[in-house]
Length: 376
Image 1: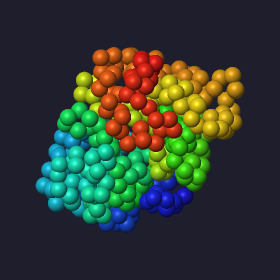
Image 2 (image 1 turned 135 degrees about the horizontal axis):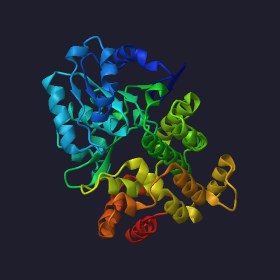
Image 3 (image 1 turned 180 degrees about the vertical axis):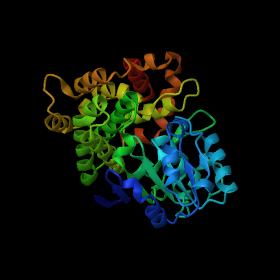
Image 4 (image 1 turned 180 degrees about the horizontal axis):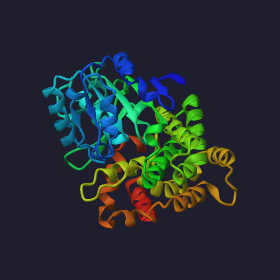
């Protein structure tokens, strides 16, 4: 069993969930609020976690997490947290429950409103080490939020921004690949493409951080090499292990920064008209952004091609486009519900996103609109 201390302490192994109570103690949590979603309540996964707790009958559960966590949901979960005098949170699920739990942990110890803590609004300095402890248990292999310092939230004004602080990193993470064995094919593919996008974007970011760059490259290799196996056979233990490791490593590389794919996907994810899945957005946007960045990444595409065994005639963008097709990703943003008339607003919001700042090529609003049109 790997015990890893990098950003936080991660227990990584099949069956690691049996150590939940031990890790709660290490995180300083005795009266948790379990934050999850309706899907995991229906499948019985939330009940399985509750069965491991000594006070299972008294542990409150918030399972109204939206697919893109919102300011409204954070306020509702906070009310439940306070009503039960909780002293920490267990986040169970994909990125949405984990990001929501981080926001609740922040609001439990810091004054509202939540939006004042957004990175683009100067919120980083306002976040102290008083954030309530979070123990994260991922059930997908995509976001890596269990080791991430960000909480992506959709605010009431329709914008989606990151709240970022090292104090938001979960105190403990339990990465048990077995919890992903029953993940549906579509979610396996979409969350896996999220992890792969993290690896690629962090690797090509212009920020100088060789350790994070090496982790990002390894993330991309693991994800690209095992995503199709995981999709084809959800019970493939090695593929599930590798995808969960790739997911975690992608988030470990976030210190190097993301890029235009995430700038656009965050802006689209804040739309109220359509509930866009983040990983699917990343997959659909990635080929166009790779072409856009081609002249600004030095020899990094050649390095990716070498490690991923991509033929020179195909290119990294062609490789991703073909992988998307084999995985059954949507043909474009239009097929996901994107409307051309949203382009100007989405592009403007993407310009404000923190991920835009670390893209290797600095986009303009017009260039973002062109990328959206290309990905339609």
